[in-house]
Length: 112
Image 1 (cartoon, rainbow, N blue to C red):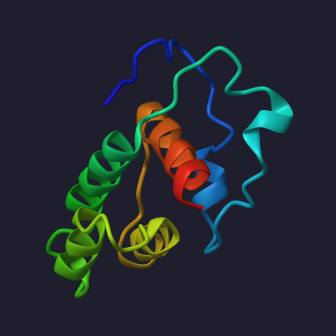
Image 2 (cartoon, rainbow, N blue to C red; image 1 turned 45 degrees about the horizontal axis):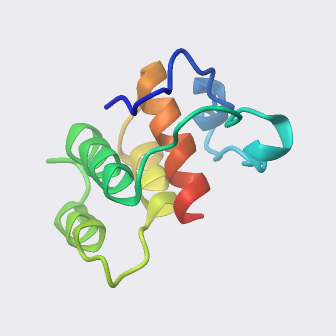
């Protein structure tokens, strides 16, 4: 999923951030200027991107797969970004694409 005017933005995340059993420490990207002049995902786009990650990396592997999908779809619930990333780390060895890393970056920024 590509957002308008996003261009070839370099994500502040890398595949190394999710290896060796730990999640990246995410810094406020505005501090580093990685969002200057670029359009982030909207709330709905971020939910769709996170749902795509769950379906790609957790479907058939994680016992809480359906529950995560329901949480992501429910606008009244907080979005479980870190829970999704922890499950992906736990149940599979993800090799994220650059676009997925950018989407994860946006989701963490938007939803915390």
